[in-house]
Length: 300
Ligand code: EPU
Image 1 (cartoon, protein in one colour):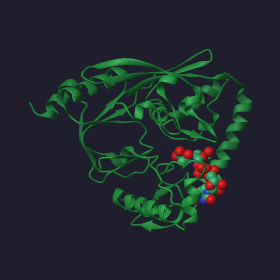
Image 2 (cartoon, rainbow, N blue to C red; image 1 turned 30 degrees about the vertical axis):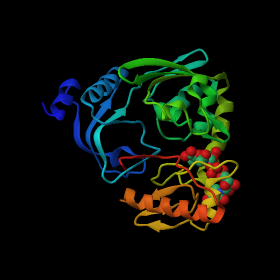
Image 3 (cartoon, protein in one colour; image 1 turned 45 degrees about the vertical axis):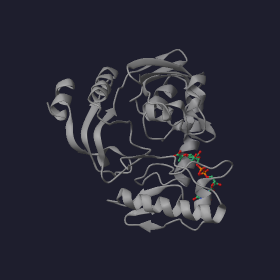
Image 4 (cartoon, rainbow, N blue to C red; image 1 turned 180 degrees about the vertical axis):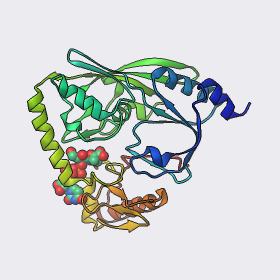
């Protein structure tokens, strides 16, 4: 049987062929995925991973698509978009499926007078992506509030595993899940008892600060590079005189130089050329090799 038919059979006819990934990234850039499936819950996520594994079909797990640059050629294989949505509060803990949006999580924490996620206000993406990439802002990071994580672990077999905070080996924008093949299913957060009004005030401050310093109303993928130790990538790119530089319809933001923005129909190729120019110039002028914070998909 053809791969498409096998996938359709296992996944209740919900496979889409040749889906544009530009529709699923905040950059609005990217070619087509051969096969595309939306996993509405952890059972269907597991099913999709299992069938791809059994068929030896390359697969990619997509969350909010907010930290991604997808190649113009797209992805040869199956893209599984995680839209699992279970979310519950248990005293000072919140248990969230990987597909829950970060904004929903922050919202729920504040409504329940739980504090510890205020800094994440306005950050796009899903719980799974946020934990995998240990996202952070304003000197805080998600590692500080993660108690444990349930994953699908893939080797010869597919098993369900549980990781405690220390087992996840969080570091700056990094976790064990970037290095092993585990797929995050759900996360238990441990928060502190807080106060709605106080949290809302703190959030207002963060929102203002981000609005002033980041091009939030433009299409992009957040910061392109990680900050090198004790330095700001944005400041280095700015000092190299690269703000505003354009290739095709991709531009280094005038507002914050660690952001590349899509002015409309930019190609991944344009973004890559800007990235190369930045890396070359910053290396030449400051002797610093900037490393990616975003992830690249479909470039090999
Ligand atoms: N700066 C410049 N020019 C620029 C941009 C920044 O001179 O074009 C200077 C600023 O004036 C400031 C310093 O660089 O003195 C640091 O800038 P900022 O406060 O904007 O912080 P950042 O280090 O550039 C980090 C995170 C952001 C997060 C902000 C706010 C990384 C790579 N970036 O940015 O995270 O929102 O702090 O806390 O860690 C992301 O991860 O996608 C992201 C945007």
